[in-house]
Image 1 (cartoon, rainbow, N blue to C red):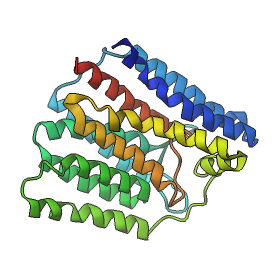
Image 2: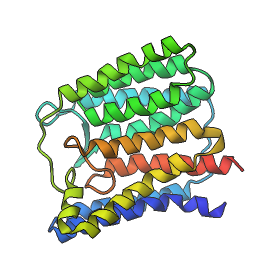
Image 3: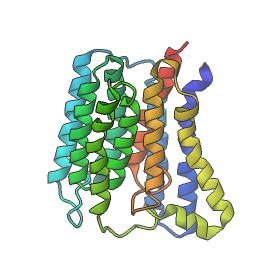
Length: 279
C-alpha cells in the first residue's frame, strides 16, 4: 500500500495544466506560481503527516464543526465584492472559505452518519446551506446539498419523511440560482477552461481529463469502511466543476486560487488514510 501514500500527487496535472494555460495567455508569473507553490507545500505536508494524526473523539469532531460555523459566519461580515461575501482576508491572502471548509465538513459529517446521528447531520445541512445562501454562493449550496443528501438518503427512515426532508435543501438550491450573483468572471479563475479551449481542442481535452482524474478515486475506488463519505466527496467536487459551466464560479485547482487546492488536499489526504484503514 506504499503507492496510496502518494495519491495526493494526483492534484498536480490540473494545477500544472492550469498554470501552463495562464502562462501561455500572458498571465503574470506571480499569479499562477502561487497555485504551484501551495500544491507543492500542501502535498509535502500531507505526506509528512501521514499516519501522524488520528482524531477519533466526538468532542473534537464537534469542535471542528464549531470552527467551520465560525469562519463561515465571519465571512458574512468580512468585506465583500458587490455584496458577495465568500472570502476572509488574512493579511494579503484572501481565502475562499467554503472551498476549504466544505470538504473538511463532509468528512466529519460522514463520521456522524456512521454513528447514526443523521438528524444532527440534517440540521447541519440546513444551517450551513442557509449560511452559504447568504454569501451568496450557488455553486457551494448546490454541491454541499447534493453531497450531503447523497450521504443521508438511505439513512433517513421512512420514504415519505425522506422525500420531505430533502425539500428544504432543494429550495435553497433553487433560491441560490434565482438570486445568482452578478460578479464578472476573471479569465484565469472562472474562465480557465475557456482559455484552454481557445488554445486548441487538445488543450481542452487534456484539461478536462486532468479534472476527471481528481474525482475518480472518490467515486470509483471508495474505501470499504467509508464508502458513503468518499462518494459524497466525489459528488461534491463533481458538482463544483459542473456548476462552473452555468455561472461565474472558480474552476478548482486549474484556475487561480489557493483555497480550492487546500480543500482538495484535505479530502484526498483523508481518502489516503481511509484506504489504509481498509487493510
